[in-house]
Length: 430
Picture 1 (spheres, rainbow, N blue to C red):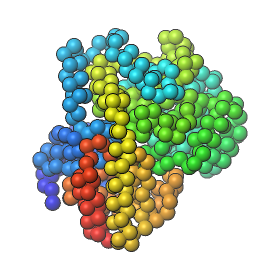
Picture 2: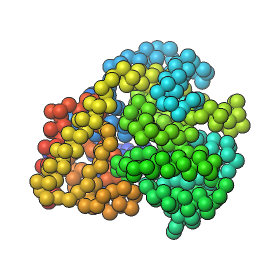
Picture 3: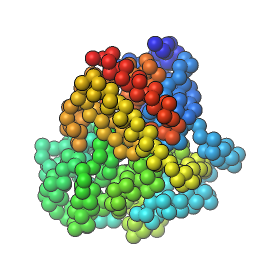
Picture 4: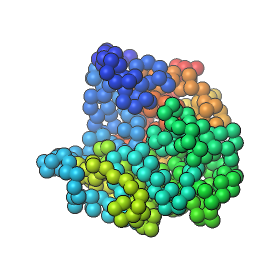
């Protein structure tokens, strides 16, 4: 059993100065029980807490550490960039290099604007879609998370054609009236919502592979059908690839499914772990952004030189590693097969979803294809599983509704350790 005395003390102190003791809610461990672990350092596949405990880590900063923690090439780029100052608030050559690399890697992106977070990227993309189309309404999907912008914190109405309700205090009913929430993977509901709001839908925004209700894949033909509806109705299709961008392929999820959106939002990996985001797409849409166009969006720290250096080094590493995605898929498949074998041995009917290096174990016997299916999971049991895995030195996302992210640093031997820990944890809670 790990001793986490220092983490407990730090959490107690943190609550005096930080709401809930954390700077992002999921870190508080409320969904799994117990107190959060405070991290001191990380290297490769491992993180180390303030008490010196070592964990194999399957969060990877919620996706960006695809090469593992503290990658030498990225650290070198950061150290070199820091020598020239931390920020300028003025253009740099590295911004051009970064934008050019993104446009070369993602065929649907002809121009790109750098921002500072995924939330900022999605907020800006929706505003741009509204400005470009002259329409006001946006369609989003239950269980897809696009950051904490007001337009996205909207619960579904009672039916596909009803408008949503705010699901956070501080979000106005006026904002909610412009957001329509429909079930993921149900194309008929999308069609109904579009027809009920004919000529007034500016954008459809979706995680092409959902990572915020666990790892949930689009049904076959679903993204193609969305593309067809948006084309026929003049709607801007936005893929939120903050999680999947450069993780599932060099062109993200759109490269895997061969469906091109009009706009794409990016984050995480393009900063190599530094705070960063971006949105980009068709030239004629992106040219509506100020200063060339009328849609205003700005940021003093956008294109930060240190973040650009880290992100460019990350994308260079991804581009130069021809076997990266196949290797990641193989090691993640090994995890899937090993955990599934453990479930079969114990006679447990739980569900595993996987694509590439994203994977989730759902504590339900039913296939999980949308948020309603994910909500049927036994959340108490997941919390027990999480704590048992932590005891065995494996750090999972502290929520049933989050994808696991596998890094290149997970070797076959480490995968075997994770599988063994999972089998022992499953036995301990049954």
